[in-house]
Length: 443
Image (cartoon, rainbow, N blue to C red):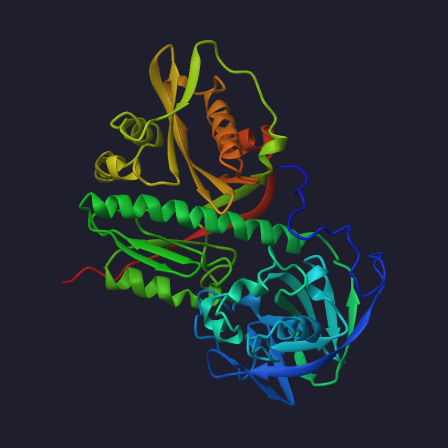
């Protein structure tokens, strides 16, 4: 689907600590302190610790769905940032905001994701993104305003997450050598993470609307994880788990939820939940800056418009028929539409050809990212460019709403995937869907 755009940190910008990114090792620093805790903050110094793909041995996170996992295995903060914050009168010190590695001589928050740090003789980590501050660290600030470490407002003072490229032992005073990203995989992952969060927020809006309409759906909304189980609504629409591409080590939470509610579920992730598991679906996750939208032609007489909040009973029937939803799920969509119509960040669209509804879709916005879902066209009207028009109009709406990123998922190799490519979207991740069978029926 073309080249992936670059996001987040500017990968053309050199690290302030020295050097340019020409592929050779650049600046050097040192590991000032290694910090661990049995859970929460502060983390306490230890002379040495083993670093693994899932984190620092001896360290635990209290909020496991917003911290930890292979892409957030290690948290890093520079002593220079700590000193700047402390100089403002805040009671911050190494380890009080939860960083595993307090370093000196390197400004990691100014480095692009993908930058690699060799620590001592063994360990290599790769910066994967900023660590969003949360209320757990509020006591490190005199006014409890933990946003002081947010990268958006204080880009020089953010903690950074890293994934582990090579495991091993790190020790206080180990030298640190910096080298350039080897590819754009970390940038693509950071982009995919924003899209994951937008999709999660969008799905929760739909699931909650179904619950408000009286359907028996059990929802888990925990950090970056979202799970729904609807035993009376068979199929993946209301029986699925999101967020496990970043947190495959927590997959038992999805298994337990589906087992508790005695239903078969589906999980979207990057790796099989069991060694011999086979995916029953493959989706392309695509994203683009709405300013780069490529417009196409559309059929004469086609109008794509956003529905008013009080305009219901048109969108759901078109979605149900064109997507071929099972009868129970189709009824659920009809029931949930009035509730979904009131969701502040969710917008429904209808495509009309000569005044007749022929397609439908929706847009959900989340932290300046737009997520496209349910974009589908009635069978008799496919092949006319209607789906692409639906994609274009939702992207334009996302731009008007202040989004700088729009994403969607589509079955790999499908017409939807091709239409996303035509409007300028680039593949940022490929996700696989795995079926988790429910418990056997009672005898």
